[in-house]
Length: 581
Image (cartoon, rainbow, N blue to C red):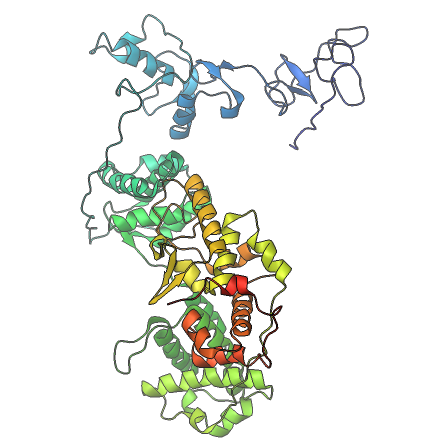
């Protein structure tokens, strides 16, 4: 049902009730020849408190209905913002989902596992203060005392809430090694079973132990009550799914929680803390790689797969190699794939058959593409020859000229000023760190709060005094961070609503979207390097000391300086205060 139109015009007679319907100047009470009995509410069917647009005051979005009785426990004081439930019944109805007549009083409401309504439970708690041994039927025999909603509190200290006790740390569990055989293997799904039913099917002992790990992580990272409830429910659902109680839970089974919008990542963290997680996830780059080599001959596919495995995982055996980033692996495979496809089309089944002439035939004529293809094929054959998978490296006799990068260009000063003066404290700080100090995207992602102290930024072995504009924006951002995430334990400087409840760092995409379409980290750093090159009249040593660039990288920017800068060319505002030690 579409949202009804909000009528702001009032009756021209009484001036206190809204119009009965569009294009009518009267309410039903002041209708000429009336009053007229209003129609029932289109949403709830009520004939009381008609408001406008076919809805009563309880259902119309612009009406302000008075408080009423809770529709579950009859407590007085429920309002519409909790769907006419008191706070206690709101939690009660989220925990239990079975409705029917109470076995004690017969009230038609949401019942607990024993078939008892919340009103009977509250009456029993009230009477048992004087008669501790009274049964549930005895406490409700003489009727029930209705109460005002949301006034119940725990039996804690008289002044404020009971102090929170830190959870006692426990040792991780040891999953059982045996598994119960099943007659049929079925896919895990929550579409045909209620999540509350699976949560109640969890092993009570395991659920109690895992709840300790949930509360411990919640206290460490400042989770809200709703997050704790969602994570606890997700963990109990996973325990309810188990065919063998106590066996490790696979990460692929946890993915089913996405069907009911439960936090998969936090459930995985709790299971990992408890030692109950079996991570069987396949990296996304591995699935992408399998799709890319589809169609290549089997021997060639296995050789390229050996290259991918060493590039992705690294190697501790001689010759040793560190793992490469996913971006590097994807670029190299994209650059070499046309050559591999061409060789496969020519009837080559293995990379051992590739000759020097075959390499020359597949190299593009475009200088940039020729350089990229040469880099990728050199990496492929050099690594396979070192592992004795191929006998020779045909690229050793082929020269591919290195493509020279283009001339670096400056950015528009107006775009930089707009980003520096942005009302978003995060965008202003990120722009300032790059525009004043040339911080890279990777350094921004891993920058921690302890890396900035005494007005200096520590990046590896470099200590950089922060410029005054950067200090102001840093102070504004820290106030914003403390206001929005006061209980976060994330040690990184830059966080957002997803990383505030864990210890992960922000991603490159978040920084890219934060800066906007006109700016990015590479363009801002290029502008900063050119600004410093002009201010120092092409001093290469100054760029290498200040920004940690290599001599060849710094030379690319100093080569743009062909004449001494004029007073209007330099930008002393950004160059001053950025001298690093």
